[in-house]
Image (cartoon, rainbow, N blue to C red):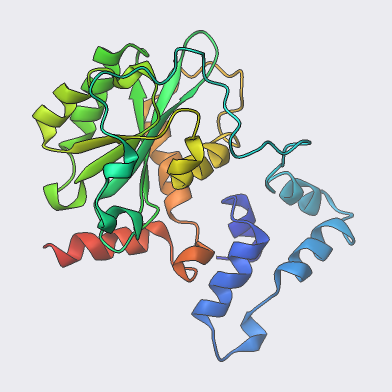
Length: 250
């Protein structure tokens, strides 16, 4: 695929440059730096094509927030029998073993939301449609999603302290998946999930009504995110890394 095609897939110039370097380590003619891509788009952009490509670049907030910032309500964090993130096994923390996930809800207008799940080892993400924010609805959706994966690839789930996970014991009983909770007002403790939630705002801006978003659309967005190369994976894609995990248990 061309650089323009990758930009349309919402790959960043940094991801494009890193992936080309990985694919063509000995052929400089088939590689391009991220600086060159930016210069081409912003300094030399005159035609409609380049203006259209610029729109696919990620937008940043005008103000950066502290990593300790949270928009959760005051009663956020009151979960009965919550097991602290501090009790997670070491294998979860070092990301060496696949099968440990982070999760959260991203919210839209009219009390709409989407559940987001990210696997820590591969950064592979899944998006789950949920018709409500109450714990029964969310837990039912998470149980259904969990049963789609091999048991070896879903061992634990780390979540923020939102009330949607109040019925976490039923989730664990139905799936044999352990649930751990972040410290209050510490969303950065599930950093991979927070990063994905930020990227999802390209597709689902704040204030958008998410209730009409079909699961097929969510699957397509997740696929696009999973097919972007990541510097932290040596410019492999999450899909490639996750599929290696699937193959290893086959």
